[in-house]
Image 1 (spheres, rainbow, N blue to C red):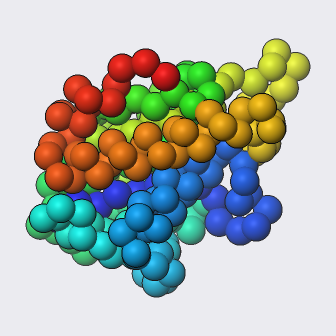
Image 2: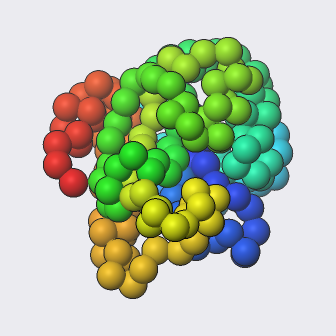
Length: 190
């Protein structure tokens, strides 16, 4: 079994903001595998599907980004048979990568991302796979919070759509093979 968690903020106000990239990827997987991510449980929206031989739990925490760890902890505690170091995958926006760039990593620090800081604090480990979705850095006169809560420009939309698709492809491949195999296949280029 795998648990795929996309990070974002609930509500219409945040729906199209950069910080919701993780939600978009979970929505893409849900569409591909005919899963309704609509059940309210563990302070999240939950859906279930089958990818290859794997049962997959799709999760969109509703605790708001900075408290994501609270919901993630509840999900992982319920599915106590899950080994977070290999069965949990978190998808989130990352300013360290250009818009549309996707990078997979097996573990690492939060890198200043408050949602990831919360998850690492609640799980007590940073050893879990993640998919980092590039949203680019803010202009010099734009605050980080304003940047992550802004929408992409129309010029960036094609790159964003491509990154959503590539992220979902990588997650599908990881479920059918392994996360390290997905890293080898999808970490090249933009």
